[in-house]
Image (tube, rainbow, N blue to C red; front, side, top):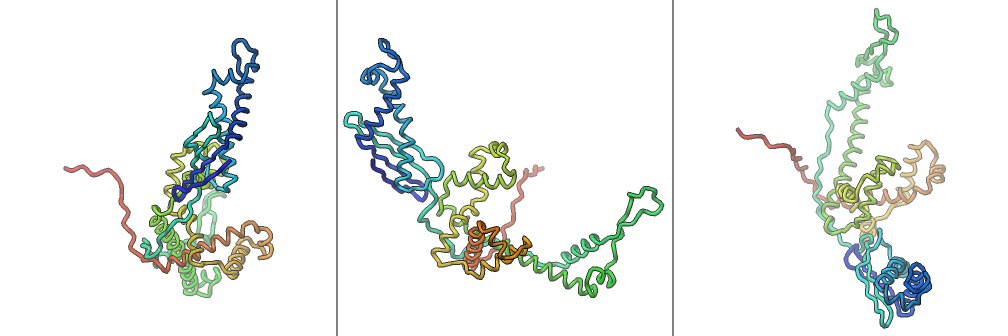
Length: 354
């Protein structure tokens, strides 16, 4: 047996399996004997007809039986021997058999994850506009804070004890002190600082996603994505929405899964490319970054850092990959050009002319 892998493009591979005459004759004979057991020829008991006679009358059916039994087997052997990593199932594209001398050639095609791809990253045009602080934001936060601290009192003159009304406190120094602040001015300053911090984090996340989107769109033709990977990506998204509701997932056809994946194509490209970018540009994650992340997670779960490391040891690779992706985004952030967001086109029916 001889196995050969040929690279067609980034994701397509061709596997050629050459079956030597000895193996071919042995496997073909096994398929023939299996076929004979289930066939009846006039003048012979079922399964007792000579092999040569059966082969004479049923050669095409025997050949089909041989292919059915060994096509997938040879493919599996070839994948294992060549250490290829296919995504999804392979397809047989060509079969050549030499019945006179023995031997056969099977040619398959399959997809892998993209390898040796080029990418562009310089002068990324990022559509982004930071959200700015406004006094209306502070007014909304104060309004909600006062509403959350409203006092419920029984409606005067109403006999139904369930009927109450809310009395919202006035914004004054006394109310501020009840809420834990020295004065109204101190309350406003503290709330404004919280809003500014939230805006900073929000704008950072929006910019990071804008960079991912811009990189993905710029490299949508440079980096090919296997269809099977796209479908599995869509299934993961749907599982987050529907849980493990297999019945709901089965309602989505392959074309629907691919359509959904194409909406997330920039994210898919980013997931596959950011590690290569890190490798090409020596971008790494420091121990200090890992420790800081663990500290944040441990605070979130209200456990010690040591307990987090023990309990969530399987999540450490995920955390490191997230940190690596952030570091790569910071690298790309230094090679980007902010442009104004394009106005979104409102789609609808055109107005009738008069």
